[in-house]
Length: 150
Image 1: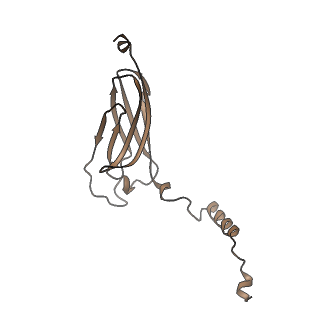
Image 2: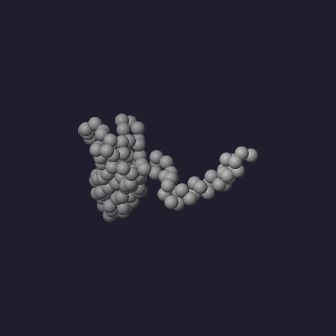
Image 3: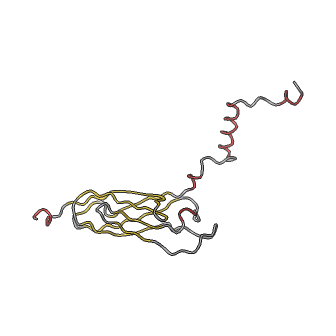
């Protein structure tokens, strides 16, 4: 053995894992991948239950991630109400500029359900015909007295 080899320990897989763990605990390395920085889409509905006809308001929110996340900049918005009705919106935006352009974080829309049932409401952000991210929740519409008399 040379003098150099005798001073340095062999780097076994266990030692490499231990060094990586220490680096993570001290913040010297970043954990995770690019998806950790991707904003997450959530959706809330008010009211969640009602008697037909019921008008609901849905709010979508992009949470986390950078404000200039390029993939979500100037997306189309599609609301699928689960009753055969789809509402779509698109925006006319300036070209994307890293560090300057900001993604839209909040989306809001209303819809009236006229028939009783359980409906899954989906909010989708899309580019052209490709869906980038989807969030879903459900709403319960109970029959009104008027529906029961018919």
